[in-house]
Image 1 (cartoon, rainbow, N blue to C red):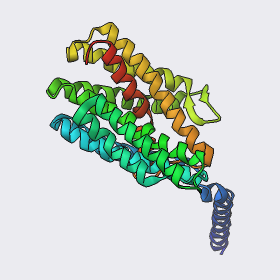
Image 2: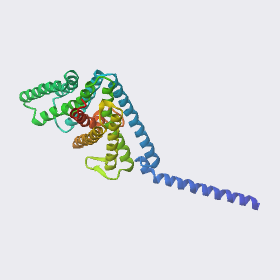
Image 3: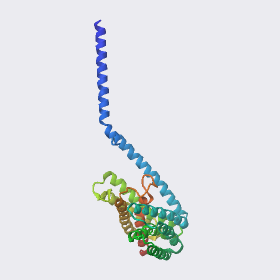
Image 4: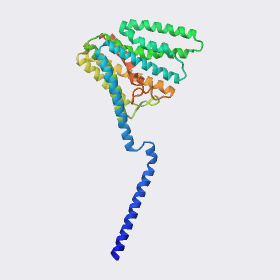
Length: 317
């Protein structure tokens, strides 16, 4: 009889202990419910970061492979690629401008965005100058004939294709300067140095970045990421010189890499400032993990035209 009572007592104590453990677990779960709903648990953050990195890497890889293929097929495919990219970037810029209350003439602006790279392919810098003249005259005529248009609308309409397509045409100018493999390698090197700058600055800045580069404009950018990205940009250009591309000296290549890297960061911050001015995070949603194409190309726009000018005055083009 005593043995039975002992067994029943032990069973009750075990049951009570189990109930307490369950209650404790439920209380712990309830305490974490707010964090879980906000996605702030460690596991959720780790999974979210992994998914974001994979999405960003995949879309970036597709974009890079398409670009590389067009560069190495030839100058004409490069031009077609830049036409498409410039048109999309200009369209995203006009979208941001409309969100800021401006009313650009998108027909004129987007037409110019298509014509600038084509003119660069057909006639080089002189072709760009001709299209620029006709574009400015067309915008002036539109402004005179349209009472509702104001000078801010004219400024945005004019700036959009110049900022995107005219600047992007530098890639076409570099590629058509040499239709051979060396021309493709040089053009690829320009773009690679800016891509690598962005990627390394993002990776280093997200891991060890402690000193903000421009906290009011782009809070995620850091000085640590800036210096790391700049070092990689210079390294890419030095490798081009060591590989005998375009007959560049190592000193000239390092100088170009330094200037292009810095100008690319300025282009990145400039586009961030444009978006912050109207309260948007991304220029579009074309590229998962990156935002719009303008978000992906912001450093290329300034960096590529800087590279063209430096290569031209350096006697390479």
